Length: 229
Image 1 (cartoon, helix red, strand yellow):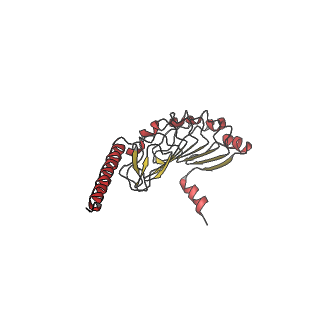
Image 2 (cartoon, rainbow, N blue to C red):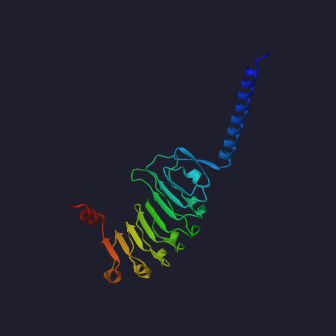
Image 3 (cartoon, rainbow, N blue to C red):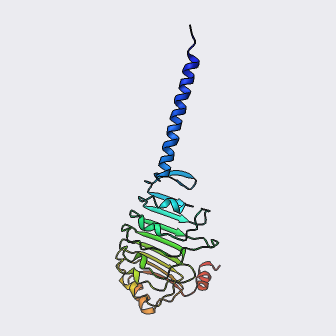
């Protein structure tokens, strides 16, 4: 009787090879169409709702369902994080954290309007070039906002108008003279301003509303107070 085992084994291996080829082709198609993305050294899909770490900015454009984005350049990526216009496409975004490391030679040049993310409730932007807050002027759901401007200080904070649920506000390297908009934040509970002096009348009014106010006119005073023994 003829031994058919070698033929069956050969057929089985051919089937496996075909399946492997089909899977590789499918993977290539999914990568080419940006359904499968490579983020932080591993693969995910464009349907992911949360990512963090050293993310390739070029991949973020396709992750339109993101709700939480933590993007930091202290991790080495193939992007300089200089242009962040992709943020206008993240319509589901709720929580945004951008940080350009002190040692990174580049910096975030401009933050685009975040009006396309109406559910955004928390924004932390550190070491960016921010001179005004117009980019969040239409984000009325904001509850927590931290801005650390790079080199040029925040000169205009009128973008805080209509922030009826904002509870926590931190402005580093503030360089503005008009703080009157702070009195238009009915839910404000915690305010920190470093780099400018909040006028006494505004400070006193906020304190009378039980707002915790922390104000250091200069970085030197902040570091002396916070890190002195």
